[in-house]
Length: 92
Image 1 (cartoon, one colour):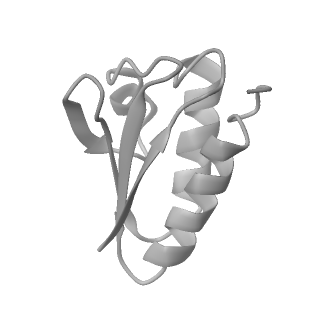
Image 2: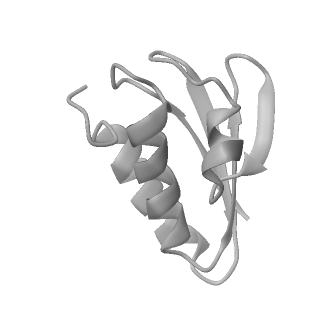
């Protein structure tokens, strides 16, 4: 298993469109993806489920933990890191 912790810097956090981009990115990998809101202490939810990701209540400035387990876990972490660092479709 590979995991990282990142700060969400885009204005909307993981709400609506940014969450959809996160889930779409996670869905492109075969690995099992889990995500949690470290700041609020919530989660460890399926990163490929839009409903689950939205329940985390991630806002700008929150830290999230992402873990991937499977054959492409390192690529998955790299791709999700790039998406979050890139603002999830919003300017950070």
